[in-house]
Picture 1 (cartoon, rainbow, N blue to C red):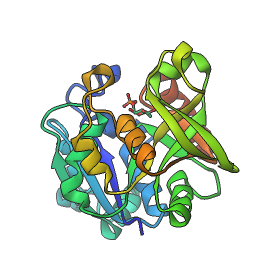
Picture 2: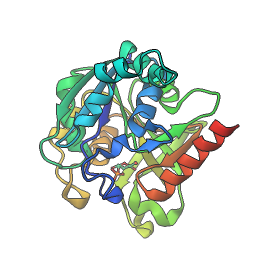
Picture 3: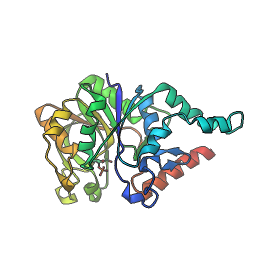
Length: 274
Ligand code: G1P
């Protein structure tokens, strides 16, 4: 069973400077809700209540967000503003939160390895909060992936088709279709140039990982950008056993850049005004 979800949240969010100078990028709001809360809600709708964060310096606001604010509660008690805190308070009641810090910024693979102390020896999920995923009126992406995990019991990455000239922004997979929307990975490359990319199937920020990934990560050398890449560790895992790539149902907003962020904002604003 996948019981835990790990949120790597140590990155600087330089694309959003100066907004992210003193505030974690995960706390940037789409309407009135921070990105990270959308991610936690997706994990919860997949049946997960054990939430683990890999944070870093300057990320205290994340901890405070997933905690009671007595002074604020007291201040708005009995007013019509009280209900604004209903959703977050439900999350706080239902979930447990644990935190560890990534001391040095050595890449996503290193961030996930830093989370080992919170995960232990069990399969787990990973959400990168700046990939905001929706699947209107149906199951979320993590839920879909957990169903697949229950059948195959191996690591799984979420993928989507991207424009071929954007391959240098993603991990790109190559694989054999084994059932509708599901590929057995034979190769994966982190941020290849379009001319070297094995396909246009890009990894997006949802993973189910089996715990042997930690040992593999410990032996994974720095790759693209001098960083320890989860993509490289997953390729090693694929070569020794199997890793699947799942073309999820739904839509992803790339909230790690301004265009995607505005697109997500417009999407949720339209829903609100319906
Ligand atoms: C990370 C991964 C990459 C993946 C992407 C999805 O890259 O390394 O393989 O495609 O997330 O958002 P980053 O966006 O952190 O550079």
